[in-house]
Length: 350
Image (cartoon, rainbow, N blue to C red; front, side, top):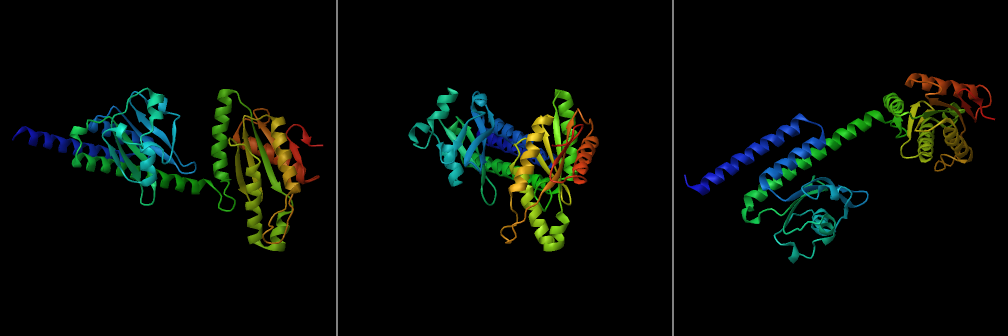
């Protein structure tokens, strides 16, 4: 057997081994990061680029970011973002077609600013879209591969690895969607009670470890039953959804809002003491007082709420206890004035 045929065979057996390893990673793990890392490692083993990266598409911002970058420039790429359409990777993301550029100096699409940031010198770029049936999910980019050894067979192999990456991303997103369905409430889109206790356990652990406080606000709508009785359950559901939206709109990104059940909501405020929690509770109470709901239905409903506030670790030290304390304070308000806030160890707000 002459030398070229031998090299061809060993290349084919290397491809088979790589396909086997990637397929194994795909079927044995649901962890997207580790699957993508395997794919990128195998790509490096086969193509031996100087640097290589997986850029993912942030569809909301219409930008690419470096999800995985390997090689001398990897650290300086961590916070870099490319606009879709910018540079060779941006072009590939925008048009969904691969680009092989043996000499970037001769290609006007090349974005020099990345080289300026990384202090590297790009000569050649091979860029392939990672795409699902409907859209581009990201781009795999290999920089400074030996182009003499890059032919149709290599291109086919690279495309196959990109298809594997697309399958992995789509699978992970499906799993994420399924998990979202089980932790959110259909009516309001807020998290559900089951997820509340999981989140509280995590928050208790985190707060005890780092010496943080956190607060819980328990919200029970006043006279909600009358809305259901007067206007029917469809209007009742619409009202709950609108109130859920109002609650969420008053919170920070790190806060959580849950529909506890029926017309009860719970807000979790990480790293928040009692006085700061009261500011949030007051804001919620005041925005309910001034809001009209179900306007589209021509109803202009105004709904108030009884609220209870409790904090960790001052009022309770376990998830169930902190909910119980906030719940009790809410009932104190419910059985006296309504439309107000009860605070653990302080009573009803004056």
